[in-house]
Length: 575
Image (cartoon, rainbow, N blue to C red):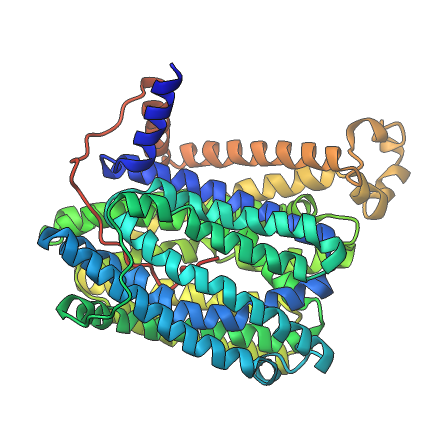
């Protein structure tokens, strides 16, 4: 019995996923697990450190992340996997030679930049975050030097990730981010008391090394062998050529992130922590609905690219379903921003002022969740047409516009840190709208009244659900009655109202959790009911999917050897 369990586990780990469906299901589950553990990580940090301290910790990532994402992530996310997958057909020796060459180039390039940036880290952060004091910038630079070591592990780890995903072994690469988050949590809990911010910094190194080490045995078992040599052959050159547009885009994206740090440093020491915390929360629905649906749709879009009717049907049905799922998540985060922030980050040292500021950032980001998620799918529609230039160009133009808006909102109009989130959201709306209009002009060629009808139905249902959620949340929250509705108790008809029996004191976590859960469930039911009244086709599709999955246990047949060439969109990040 024990032998069978071991053998079964070995097969799950080492054998490739047999279909796109099994791989997509595994990836989606791991996305959820990774995002949830990411929230636990942030909660742990908020428990041990004040927002002022955490701003310095988060700011320290900016320089190492810039170098890593431009030099490494852009290459492996858009170029390495498709070239390596094709090279396997020429023989394993050739494929492993490509992997070794790319790994060595990555290590060498990263090492050169990391050493240079480490030496001048204090001066660079003087430019990146001039609003911080000299002592704070020295702390940031000191942490950043250690974080470069962690990113070095990621350089090696992402090669292994590319190799394993090319071989359709998705389990271990999907588990790796969990170990990264666990490393930070362990480092924070174990070392923070004595080492302060060096505790989570050490945790990052532990997590990054774990991210690499958990993939190494399976990669070796699959045939990977490290060779200390660089051979620039045709395939390696192809990787470089394919990576160039993405590198340019990632470069601009990293500049925008530096600008966010730059302007937030002038607001207050804690502002960057508020911004980071709010961004972390809104990335959950964006990744879950945007990335997963976009990845699932790309193979079909690519296959039907020569059949305009099928292409249009796949794109529009996927887009409408994405909007149908993302809109209630957006409303949930807007209406329940304060309860969500309190439940996730509400520790003793995370003040009410910090909760309010993070809530403003979260709700502003949440307003653009649907557009951020849609960008993932719309960009892939262009990729299916072998057009990477258009989405990249629009992304770069959007980033430039967002940087300009950052300056206007923060330095001219004097907005708080949520102004940075507002600029990002406006940019997402612009980018999504331009992509959609160009797609319709070039490929869909349909009337906008037809295209927007499903969106309007979902929007009406979402607004209705949001209104119901808002009223229920305020009616049953004791603090609202005490602060804003106390005048009602002076009215003769309400004097005998059993006030204390139906309201909840949300100062207690259990009551806040109950109220948040009840409001969410009622809001979801309201969304479905209004969608049914409006005869939303997306509701029918969603309910049929639930019925097939959980009642009949049936899945659509998918060819076993179907593969996908995934190129991340401008809206995606590695966070």
